[in-house]
Image (cartoon, rainbow, N blue to C red):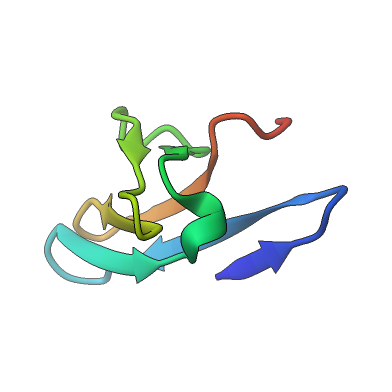
Length: 74
């Protein structure tokens, strides 16, 4: 996980050399309710963090997903 700065959004990189998996990521309350997307496009859904700032992000089997806030540039 790369937290980012006030000027640059961070990201979460998930890598799988096995089966598809989901990882609960604790992002912090500053990300509560924020939606994330896979910048690389392998996972098409948007995933929202809950009220505590936790998000269940996934990666396809044998793949890489780079999750970014949907409100970030890029």
